[in-house]
Length: 328
Image (cartoon, helix red, strand yellow):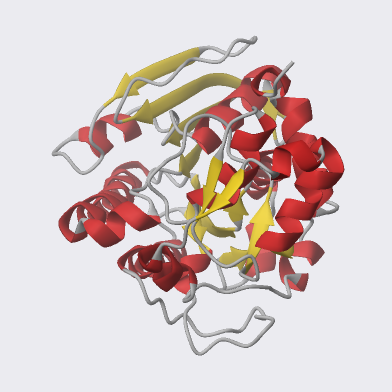
């Protein structure tokens, strides 16, 4: 029997992961007997054969992490974060949530480990923002972390903490540097990368969208479906294969904004493309210019992580999973 905790369970990835776990009822060959979702706002509980508990709170607040660990969940997903654009605008909030919250969680696990020998699998959602200039055109697995935003710095510190706490045996951790998730369902968030989804999601729903960067901008993408697959696989993976390198860049699709628009045209036609309006935003351009564009992820591929087939497939996957969001 397995108990799973998703911190950030109300977010887009947390909800997708929760639905997948609740629908399957098992993970790594073991029956899930309890799924707990925690977020700053009360998360929606997925339907399925699994017992689900939902709670809301502030991970960085006194006692919150300890209460989450009381039930000693065997698998902990730490997906909660203040996203890139917001972390850059609000320095204090970004560090409190993204760094303090992470270390408080890790310390709560360590304390329980010292009391009882508790050693859960911890899956940490990191980011491509841990990389920064100077960057090669294609980034390999040995690229040095040189974040150039507060968000990237917070995630890079989280990666180091994860590796050290795992080395010391307090938990069994794996960090996933997720590609930019596209197409994100629902409403836009405060991430600087949000337009990558918006220029597809809104036109697919028959609405106008604003493009704040040059169409030549290139980036690294994965669909929500692929990202949930990465999270599921990370919980099942034999982490002995990681050695001391506990953090992995996830596979993705390297595409320009122009490639995105052409994929939209192939799937939804010229009428959808005509709904995109180019309005340059220097602040967004400045953040995006520091981000990497393409990766060699053979290490993750060798470990069984599987990406989307193409950017057109990403658009088609969105329509399959979120057909209700498209115009009728």
